[in-house]
Length: 587
Image (cartoon, rainbow, N blue to C red; front, side, top):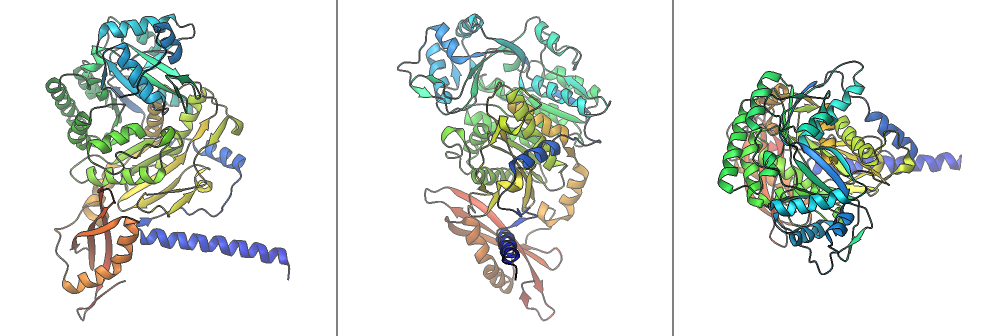
């Protein structure tokens, strides 16, 4: 016998056994259509080439008319530490603490240090006009400063328009529904159609305080390159262009609506703020359900306001985009899992915690009574899009394209090599914190993206080839989400049809309590699945119920309880055979 052949054969058998065991484990835990890696190592050069090629080709029949609103401004980008020097503030004796608003220079230093020490992206409003003028004047004295198109909506609109280069002569049409001052109009002229009535006499400015990885200030060292944004503008804070946008979008006949700017109202009086949220929802109701609506979230501090956005706005939008800081705040506001532990040291997040948190959000807020069907999550090291099955298409490519757009924007270079970037995901990573031993390998994702399903939801993850020498931090999340939307295809008819017929998606008759015989078989069958689903957490069975589809599909709903009292509701389903003799068995 040839010993080399025997050794290779043994390796192949070992890899095959790994695939089989992982597939069985995923089936037991309720995960489906999982793409199992077939190799335990990979060629990074080839993976990088495959990833960039995979991310580069948009669908030929994707959306072409985008209406974007509502926040826009001019960004003044400067080095944060140089601005503090110009202000005469060294950070000595400053105590890091978060503030919902900035009233004084002391507040600015404290909240800046809060984000700086963990390398987190932050944004706060300066409520005192004189304090904001002091900061702007100091920023203008800095030698290296740049002016850019600012505001989530304007950045997303520019990102989308830039994709026209991929369309071989086809045109992309973008309606800008935010306020446009003279300088911003010059920056955007020729790229967008402006809504009638959106023009301003003066531009609104936001100050982007950037800091580099390893920068030292206030006794702390920044673990990563990032930025802190401050603003003081009434146009966006009062959402003054909402009615203008409502009128314009009705005439524009868009096939995708992209919205942002709700965070700018955070410091408005609660009563007037709630009234504008209600006005915003009324605008959403005028948009046909066949036209997807995406809402980009941004940095906020008030849990009550975030909770109001989730309760009032989410039922009337189809998609949201958010990063780890924003996800954690949503979880805190709605009492979700990992609400205090999602973001770890250096603002690095765990894939398992994110996966479980996104599942909880979809399971809680995406149903037949809501339009909400998609989340685009982005962080430094990986992105995930989770969606209702059949609601969107081309999502695997969309998440990869968003990741690559982030890399090229951060590096300010469209022609990167492997030497310019690095992967920071571990070699293997979990899908859910409830099942930490069920993992994906980086090798399977590094060539593009990888997908799996859980219940009625599809997950797609792409790693980020992180820029080693980043040149920009502003608008990365907006670039990611806008790119993902450009590559995605919304299929609401297919989803709503499935909602009526597919038991996984909520189109059920009324629940019925299972018969004693069915419950006995069901309990035995589900015992392993429940214990596996909760992992190391204790389990409390909440209730058991069944629905008749074909034969009988039974369900147990149960609660996973952590040692510190956190609870997560889980659902497991299984179909049983009802035999002519009245007995019930597993398929």
